[in-house]
Length: 79
Image 1 (cartoon, rainbow, N blue to C red):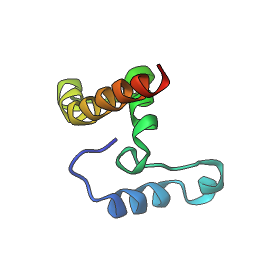
Image 2: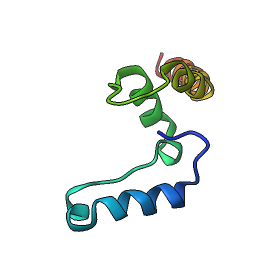
Image 3: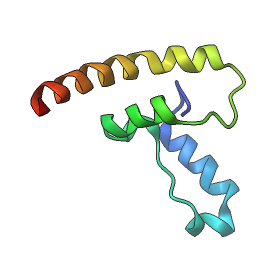
Image 4: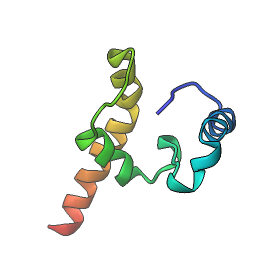
């Protein structure tokens, strides 16, 4: 997760640093994942490195709101 960053530039930077080991990693960007996976990350993910956690949680707020609405609708459909 890297709010306010150009995804192409981030991908280029990551691949540059992983030159020889790129095949070992499956690189995904949070913003491009399906909502249910974003929700799973927000609910159960583990923060490995974050210099400013309050900003991260603020960034997640809109995704969390969308996910909570989606979960509610899914519960209604299943019931």
